[in-house]
Image 1 (cartoon, rainbow, N blue to C red):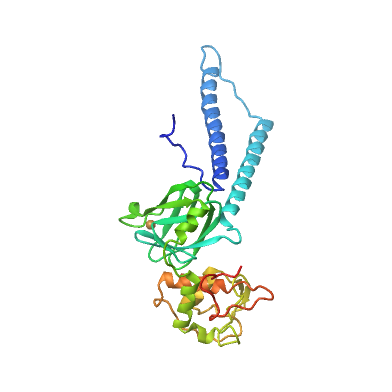
Image 2: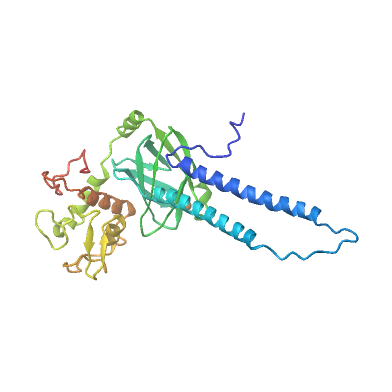
Length: 328
Ligand SMILES: [Cu+2]
């Protein structure tokens, strides 16, 4: 009966039910408080109305009453805060081993690229039941990647990466919106998320020739001359990048930070001020020389060198196989 009157978008991700539960709780609580206030206004207006011959009586207030209506809401708010924080941390923490999709936003379209190399525009195919992490950046203004059915929304900013993740639980086609006003055709910056059964997804993946992103990155790595300094066999003039991703690194200025996508990105484009301790600041600036897609490919390549498996030969630039860009 209410099929054509959806109050909620479909719950198509693992996190959707949690978000809705919190939302419904807030809605019910707010409705209760709202009704209680307006109900009491009416009741008191009638009960304490002016009556002929009755003088108004001064009421001084009650400490127990005020304590009650302060302390109970305090704990209710704390409960809401804790509940919201749990959901927030779940939504902000991509699980290990998630499939990665690189997203580049521009006025006014979404460009998406799978780790396996497939490119899409305004459309993203994903398998059901798999964690998918989005590594997103913009090549012009601020956009926002919003999938109501998954209950995720994340700003996409120029000059850096932001991430989001989801775990689709229901095959189907869902809306993708840009949720940040980004210019004239902002309302047209929409797309579709197609959630497929794993077998269908595999068939879709193998549908066309594609070079894995890390392999494109590897090619670029040698074309741009990165491999002359960042060597994987001996220590070169730049840091060895094998096994670097996800590890803490000490910088020349005394800071220590964990190597993540943003650090790699900043170092590739302009490493000034971020040089690794013990290395001279001689890396050229690549800002303006690389497209966002090329930076993504380089980052994906460096990440594919990221995990060292004991007893297994270190993947070097020449040994990365075409089919298996990532050592798990
Ligand atoms: Cu936009």
